[in-house]
Image (cartoon, rainbow, N blue to C red):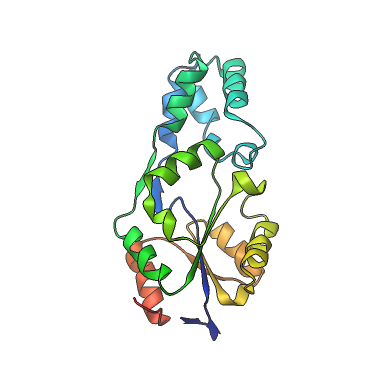
Length: 207
């Protein structure tokens, strides 16, 4: 595959919003209904699952639970809280697993995801297509998260491939721009059909 005159050897995929769809407000709603002020808690806890301290492994689920008990009057026991946190709030995007399987036969695939350690275990078990990836890189293990430039440099060091020979695919423009600034080619994912068409136009093998 050639993009802007470069031969692509590695495709780096985001997880949420690219490989699988998600609605993290489902988690917040499950928790907020058990707080002293459900409506207010729902607003204040928006994007809690994407909090930097949680996705980089600095904060554990027991600590998050205790914080919510103290700050929001959460009435759930830890076991109940953990169950609400881990109940799936994501699902496969139809056709994406098949595309990943096809691409894995011709390119080196790397997953690069911002995700907390506990939900990552759930997602990984639910999606066997994770086995198509050569590397599974998650923020909770790396201790850093997109769009930190160092996380992209880590991909280059790990693969031994220069950024100009890598295509980075993410649904967040900020993350794509951060990758481009370091020399990666970038695609902001919106739909599977749009992504397939870009791959075809670039002459991707097997597409």
